[in-house]
Length: 137
Image (cartoon, rainbow, N blue to C red; front, top):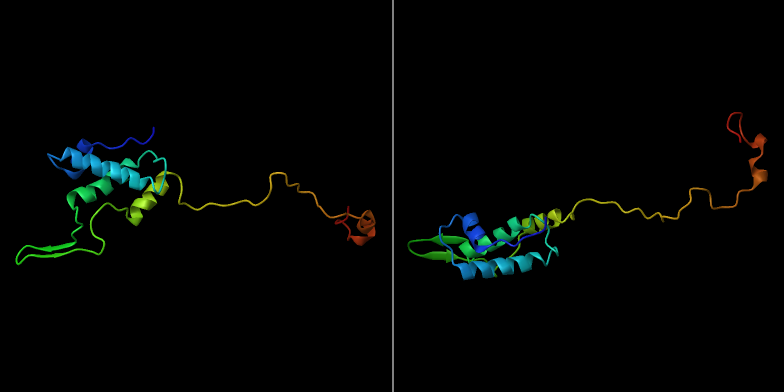
C-alpha cells in the first residue's frame, strides 16, 4: 500500500475539531506533504502521521506562540516564528518509514573476488622438510 495524502476531514479528526476551515486545511496538508518530500520522495506508507502532525501544528498554532499570558497580555514568539516546519523527530520518522536511517555495512569486496592467493606460489618453498610433522602439505 502506498502513501495517500490525508484529507481536511482527517486533519479535523486528528485535531479533535468538530469544524475545520477546509481550504486552509487543504493548503496546509499539501504544503506539509511537499515539505515531507524534501526528506523522502516518494513518501512511504505511514507518512500520513507525519504529514498530519506537521499540518496540525500549523493549523492550531499558525504563529507558533510558545508563551502566552492573558492579563496583562504578554506573548513570546521564537525567532523565525510561524509557518510549517519539520522537527528532528519528523525527519527521523520519515527516514525510518522509508527504510533509511539505521545502521548499515558496506562490503568493499568485489563480486568477482577469488579466495585463492594472488601472489606467485613457488613449489620449491613448500617442500615437506620445511614443515613440522602434521603441518605439511
